[in-house]
Image (tube, rainbow, N blue to C red):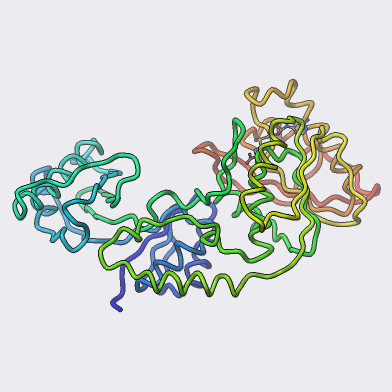
Length: 384
Ligand SMILES: C[S@@+](CC[C@H](N)C(=O)[O-])C[C@H]1O[C@@H](n2cnc3c(N)ncnc32)[C@H](O)[C@@H]1O
């Protein structure tokens, strides 16, 4: 099979994890970009990255790259591409454009030009234009323009890869599944250690940790991919990838516990849990995090903290102070990883973080902080 030029999109801070996932899937010529990883590989590599990556948001395949100096130029060069290699007249399609360019300052206008060019390509041959569809199109086309360099790509994932299929119920501030999987990996979680999320919301961190511990590829949860609609889709190849992933599952039991003060969240977690047998051993409890304790001598806490008043937490600084106290007194011997976009409130934790990492949540700057929790001797310090 010939080598395809591929790009895996991700969140800032997770590029190295995605690069390793691509390497594991057989990708070559891997390069780290901003919020993306570029690589080369055949169809199998493209299918495998889609099926197994935990932190990639989408995998794009380059169709053509060219230079255009005007909207007409973009139209002509797009129309010159043989689109019947990529889709059929009776398939629906969508165009999504991102532009960093003075010539093409309006991404919607550039997308419109590409849409017309593709539709006209088909009209010239068949006398009919294929239909555009915004929701659930058969074929998703992306246009990236940087100055006058235009790249047309097909989105091989279809629906974003964070849509694993298990999370039917969520609260007001659910964490993205790819971000949760990234944070679990950054925390160096080991399946043999207990993991507690004391503000678990809809349970994303624990669900992703469970999949990681059992080495369950996200694709095994049964979602579909955009490439399944493509011409020349190789269903046997996808079956082989599924069967390889099935054989790689580790049958370990995990100690994963989630707590939330909101009873509705715990009901949502239990509902989401029922969507896959892999989640069987995760436990969820309604509790104020201030009352959460452990009998274990060591383990890991990972929590995505409430960050604003939408989450009805009362005095946020007070809550963060109490989180610091709870971690110190109830979890000696644990590593605590707290994630929040409220940097001011994080200063109220009152323990000195041993690591700070900038990440993003919904496009907003956020911080992941590690706290090593010791028994008695080490006194809490105010963090800066
Ligand atoms: C940012 S959300 C967590 C989102 C979660 N990671 C997810 O993916 O759905 C923070 C959660 O903290 C919970 N919370 C707020 N105050 C709490 C407290 N005192 N004890 C336990 N949970 C609390 C909220 O109910 C909310 O579900």
